[in-house]
Length: 65
Image (cartoon, rainbow, N blue to C red; front, top):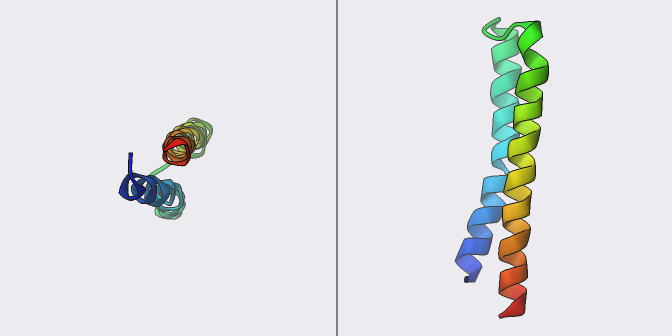
């Protein structure tokens, strides 16, 4: 592992904001119906958790080096 991998994982976590922005615009333009929202939000939450876990694992690996 190196600092580049850590930086890349940090940037990947910002993807959650992009996901939420996309969802917001989809709601506004009517391409997402209300019944779909809980599943979409759970999916975004799960992806964010996975991104953060991956980031933390990379962080720990860099600290241990």
